[in-house]
Image (tube, rainbow, N blue to C red):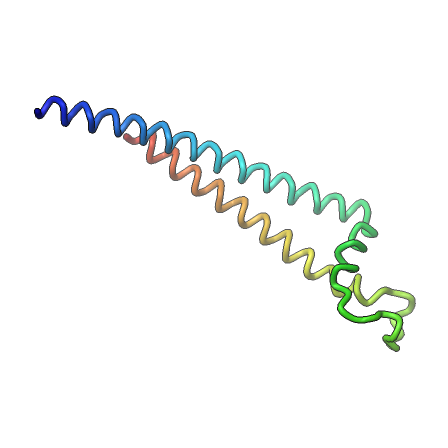
Length: 113
C-alpha cells in the first residue's frame, strides 16, 4: 500500500511539475510579447504622433467645435489623450513585467522540485 501511495504522489508531482513548467513558459512568453508590443507602440507614436487621433476621438464626450479655447490650432482632445496614452503604455509594461516575474518564479519552483 505504501508503494502505491508513493507512486501516486510521484505521478502527481510529475504532472504538477510539467503543468507548472508549461504555465511558467506561457507567462514568460506572454510577458515578453506584452513588453515588445508596448515598446513598438511607443516607437510608433514617436515616429507618427498623428496616430493618437483615433484614441483622442474615442475620448470625445462633447462637441469640440463648441469649445472656445484658443490653443493656437491644437486639438484639445489630442492634448488630453497624450497623458492617458503614456499611462496606458506604462501600465502595459508593468503588466508585462509582472507576467515575466510570475513565470520566472513558477519555473524556479518547478526546477527546485
